[in-house]
Length: 568
Ligand SMILES: Nc1ncnc2c1ncn2[C@@H]1O[C@H](COP(=O)(O)OP(=O)(O)OP(=O)(O)O)[C@@H](O)[C@H]1O
Image (cartoon, rainbow, N blue to C red; front, side, top):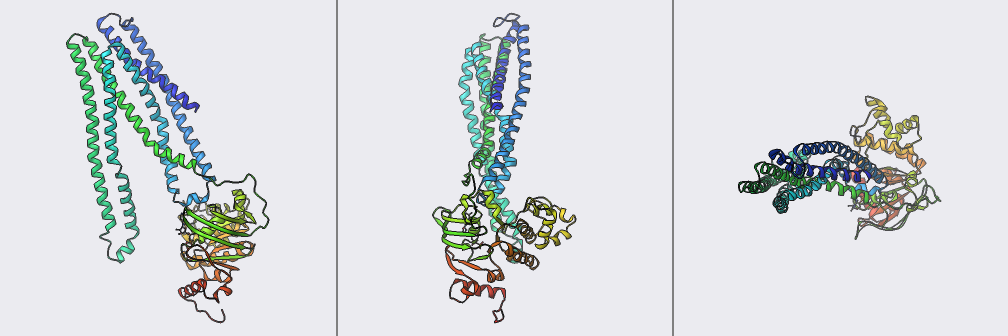
């Protein structure tokens, strides 16, 4: 704020000097032409005055520019740091809603747009806003008719410029969504080539053609409106300059103004016009930073999950408990209803149920991605809302489907699992999860960088790294979304072997897809499509009674090509 206040003062003085210098050209030129004093001073003194003002202006502009850049850099740093701190405190569920792309655009391009407002636009708006009244007042003092003409012209000019901008924006508005849609359809067209070719439709893809037509329409309309906007803006210039110049010429021809004075007035009129144009266009330019600033405000204002100052002590480490839990992501659309279950320490619970029944949601509620709508989720015997995030996370390891790795070495991506782990600990965990094999294949072994998000590894390999982290962390509770359907046989074998390791030392909650995992779980929770617990028990208990589990099991067994035999 100190830098901003300093900037306001500096730029106001610069604006006043700008306006004054233009006004002083009038008496200076007249005294030069007539050889007499004007407003009490002769030409030499006026030139000294103007030179002093120019010097002061140069110094102040330098200070103003340095101040603006300093302000912009400070703002950038502060906003980056504030967004960083905020992201670390937001509930994990906040990140689920596809916000990552938006944040990344915001902290790169968006913040630069906002900083641009600080660095360039704001100072120019202040300068022009102050210079204009000084110029008009000076002109009024010299020739009140000139001042009056400026006062009358000003609202017309601003109105016409705003109209031109409005037309231009109306042309640009539909272009962005149409072009975005076209880009999305092109990507879709490329990605679905195998399916389209198989269906013999690769030469003619209607959604892409429709998007192309819409984009062409929007761009053509934008072009026409842009031409119209330029016309309106251009007419503005012509009308005002020509009218004021004609006025000055008429005054000159009637002898009311001398020739030098007339020339200076025409010069001032042109300068006046330039001033108004700059003011309006810089003020409009500020608008371009507004969406980014609004986004920043939205992020910084996003609701954090309330946290206690001190975590309550854990009274049953390694346990999970759901008591009368109801949950909805969107008001009025329940996802989980009246969920009750207990998971003893060091046991395995498998959650099964149809797609969309809320299996992943149960795991997310344990990790407090969201808070329950009603009821209680306990970890280690304590309501998760009574634990500080760091303490809750210390109890949990999560191996979910979308594993995103850091753009760092393979080893560091595993070491992130536990701060105090040694390289040997990490490699031991990694070997168990089958990551050693990946390291031996990579050019720099454990020190190979895995690329942003881990893109140089396959999905299954990334999941192995995630399992290695969990093995290293040795958290009392492991939440695992098996998702082995996406894994090839080799990856699957490693993940399953690791699960075996994990079950010996931790409580394991598995969103189970593998029949082996389900069958050997100590407890199976079967969710119904409407998010309720349909059945609960062990495999042997459930498979022998009529119900959704038996149906689920039989279908899976058929799909997997298993045969139920006596020995098994
Ligand atoms: N962030 C979210 N916002 C709104 N609704 C959501 C969100 N995440 C999930 N849902 C909805 O909640 C319901 C349960 O989703 P969840 O992912 O827990 O199911 P699931 O049983 O794990 O499904 P699957 O087996 O397909 O992974 C679904 O109807 C889903 O559309």
